[in-house]
Length: 464
Image (tube, rainbow, N blue to C red; front, top):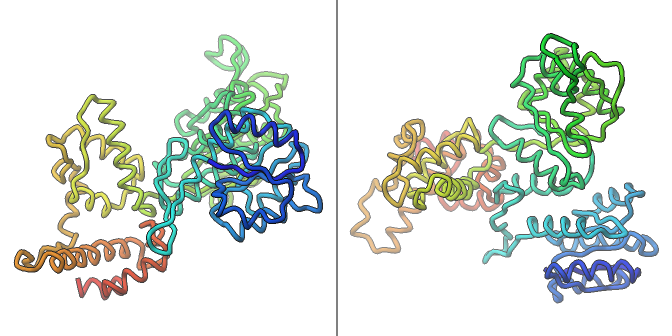
């Protein structure tokens, strides 16, 4: 990775040079912003770090110019923690990260790891740019919606703001919470998770805030709660919509003041905890019904991050499946196996109401059941194999007597028509939503539909 540092401060450049070169990176230096945009491509620069102390706001002007001229380039601002508005201004101009000065080695290394995870972009043989495989903090995805999730985590993770993670069950909300923790300066402190729906309401308050001896039957000694256990780190509250009214009030107090009081206690304890909450319930509707505090909702969703369901990112299924196959083969001591083409089609045509968790379980079960080197439809659950009758076969016409090129094109054409037709039907005929689910640009999908002579779902059903 080649990193360009734009700064007049020799001390900043020298400090960064030592850390970057020790980590195997190459540092280039420019003392001023003039001409930087023009050298990005010829110098093969991967990352630009600009100093907020450049005169005449040149650092911010440079960020704006770089974002417009080189939108795929990763940029960062070097600023001081005492000026949070400086970093926010840089983010508004397209910066993806921030480095505190004087520089800290651990913070710079964390910045490099974030840059590594987010910079895998290559130019396709066409005029469009496509993303290579992304692996980010244990999550996998190449679709635009997942790349946006990764970008949000990288950007928000380094702050201490409260985050509300939404999404259907099984989409990976706890993975996002752990990623936000690992991206933050709290990563060396505790990460504590509580599923608020897993405990009776009368026990949640004690679990979160602790209790004193004799506070209730069974409280034989003083016990600290999870807020105290997470001091300095992150507390993840999953299914926060299941909190009762009293617990909601106490969580709000803890968020606003940092003070917690044990059940049965009279003294408060101050804690330094970042809270990340998650829900698959419509909290806005619950506020309207009086089941959730409006002030707590506003305090929780300083930043909202919604995970897409798997049906909206079907193009990630091959990547996720390959990863699960590798993990479970190692875990169960089984030989490596791959998905057959027919099994892959079935996976792509399933609605996945259980999302990534369901896919994970399907792959694990299929791996255990498979006998050969490939996982075949017979190894998959009946909920998937029952769909085979709905997939239009592209073997309707005998192809053996045709020239190879013509036979292949005809088979591909019929497959595209069946696959794309099913994808459009799943997404209600919405081109933009279908393109996002398949990991395609909207114009690319439109061109493909036109080339395959596909129109809207009702017409397609008659033609297919």
